Length: 365
Image (cartoon, rainbow, N blue to C red; front, side):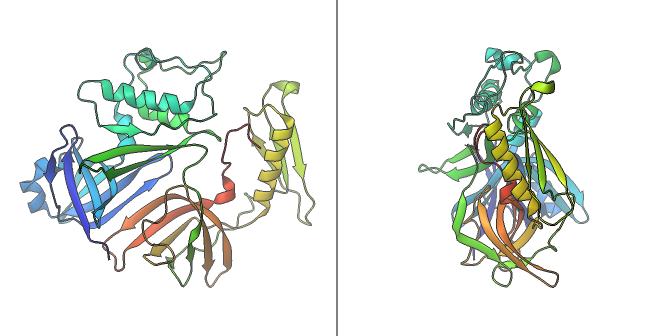
């Protein structure tokens, strides 16, 4: 079983503030296109005597197992809870929610026209970390993409008088289909220092995994009943692409499957080709004809999928069998949450049907 250690570090100097915190009720995890979270409790007497090592907005906290860093982020809140103090933290990207563009256009880097969003994301971090006392030493991956932000008619702007948060800009840049994806990570470097990283991926985070799986009776501890939704079902997909009025790109993909006709509108305003639009409509129709999805499972450490063997964004085969139904399919891990206090160690995974995602640029087939 993994041996867990939790420690804190000063955000600016990098000095270790406390090497081993006596935490309980610990739960932490990462997510797709978000900071992830960390929570734990601590005895008030201990916290009162060591408040400097837990200062919100100044101290970083890490979870380590077997010499490997499993999570890192900033402490944001300390709050009394019954006879304990609760610690709440979030990953590196949460820092951008407390930073603003007060110079405008990221200090002259913008506006952007047909720019790769990966470039703008790196510019966001460079702008944030070049300000006095703003360097969190986060390294953004040198990823490139074929996605575009801004157009000659509508450039991508960051106006100083709107004082936008850099976190809002980051969310905007990864919000559309075909955009890059990110998650937060950290690891030890050869010299023992800690590398804080924004994992930036295109066309997707993770990969399709055939070496691990989750199955009821093997490593799935619990799973909610499978959800079957008529609101999600469709056997006709109407897709619209670029253009306005009668010049709008348009495609319809219908099928007669013996069921009542159900239609779904798929809006793809950046798609310029009718052939591409037709393929996207067909893919969406096939996805919506398949009923049922698993949204969350709790798994235990097991050779079929040891804890930590997956990455955020991975597609994994999931088989859920319970008193209500049996369901098997490919699911994408969009978030995870570890609970080291359980025996054996467990993790809760947030899932989405893998075919709900289009991996690639909006122009791709």
